[in-house]
Image (cartoon, rainbow, N blue to C red; front, side, top):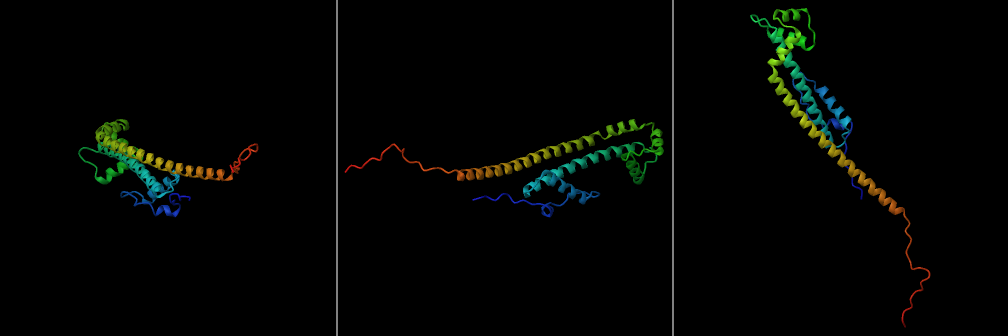
Length: 203
C-alpha cells in the first residue's frame, strides 16, 4: 500500500500559515509579508514545517538588517551631537534633521560650516563618532552574530528536513520500480532434467 507523503501547501494557503509580522513602529508589515513569501518560494518550502522554518529564516535576516540600520543610525546620531554648538544645543527636531542629512550623505554647506566651527572635517567627525559609540556598536555586532548563529541552525534544520523527505520519496520510487520489474519477469517452472527418468515406486 502506498503511503501518502506529507501534506503540502501552496499559493494562498501559505499566507494562512504565517504568523503575525513582528514589525516595529515605522516598519512595513506588507514589506515583511512579501519578504517571507519570497523566502518560502526561494527555499521551495512545501510542507507546514518547511514554511515555518522558512519564515523563521527570514525573520533572522530581518533582525540582522534591523541591527545594521540601528548601527548606522547610532553613528549618525553621534555625529550630529558632535557638531552641535556647546552653548546652544540643537533641539530634537533640528538634531533629527541633521541626523537624516548625515544618513542620506547630504552634506551641504551649512553642515560643513558647522563642522568647521568645531574644527572638524567629515573624516575626523566620523572617527570621533565611531570612537564615542564603539560600545553600542559592539553590542549590536554581538546581536547580529547571535542571529547569524540562529540562522545557520535554522538553515541546517531546513536542509535536513528537505533531504529526509527527498530520501523517503526516492526510496518509495525505487521500491515501486523494483516491484514493477519483478512483476514483469516471467520465471519458468523448474522441473527435472529430460534425461532423468522418474523413479518407480516399489511394488
